[in-house]
Image (cartoon, rainbow, N blue to C red; front, side, top):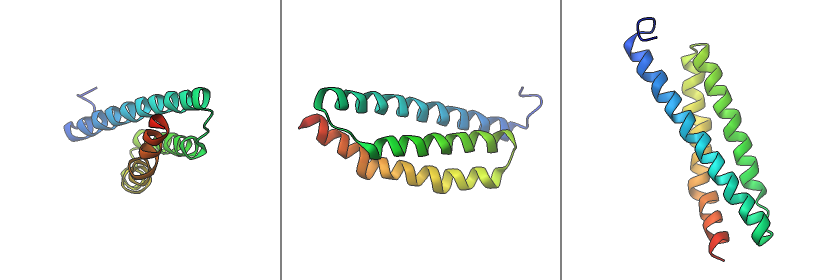
Length: 103
């Protein structure tokens, strides 16, 4: 594959693949934590489910843009949609999960 893709694009694709994998793992872990909170503490966290859905849509868009070599859409998705979603996790949702786990 390296012979068909310029070096920079190959490196970029590797980084996007790693990022997508890491985000998928993050969604899986936080989904499990959310399920534990629901079953053990009878707490529902709809904001987490909504954020997961949005995050997965963003990942799907990133993958489609990557396949189409659409760097403008790819940049917008990463710069705005993904960044906003991950910021929401950092500021609101991870602290919410921590509070629920320790209460």
